[in-house]
Amino acid sequence: MIRAFLAVELSQELRAEVALVQQELKGKIEPDMNRNRHISWVQPAKIHFTIKFLGHMDEQFLDPLLGVVEQAIGSQPSVNVPLERLGAFPRPHSPRVLWVGPSEHWERGTEAKRMVEIRGAIEEASESLGFLREAKPFSPHLTLARIKTGERHVGSALAKSGVLDSPLSLGSLAVESVVLIKSEVNPTGSVYTRLWEARLKDF
Image (tube, rainbow, N blue to C red; front, side):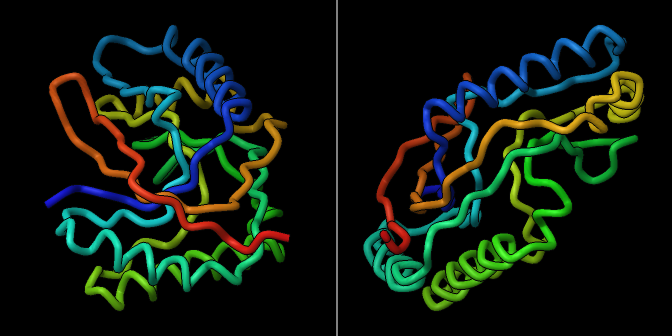
């Protein structure tokens, strides 16, 4: 058994840009917080765009899953997801996750609908092998940090800094392929291993 998820990887250039934004965010909010908080910042090398968390799976499903995902997305054209704003889940004043992602305007547009279609095709393909559908609504984003304790302190620091109101211009995440990543947890954190890649339609 392995623990795995499907995701889109970042280019080295985009990863470097996202790391800079993460550092700037850290510098703006941490000085205004007391010790009664715990923020876990995601290592830049581990930042990715999660499409579907699979949980624990038997390794005998690795090849069948590749087959159904390739069939599901092989005819889908690639999508670019612009990284234009910082956000917080579930609420800015009491966040558990800090992220970077597309604008609300993009989320109402054609590209967003195509991204939802790609994700839906992957959900159906995974379901055909017995994997459960994701219950939460799909929201394209890259996780920068997770707040373990002190959510309201972090929310106050975010409000004071004004970072959530400032637009970003990081370029776009090119969704051209989906990779299966194995996640192993050890005392120093998660270790990710890329197992296979399924590409979308090439032009």
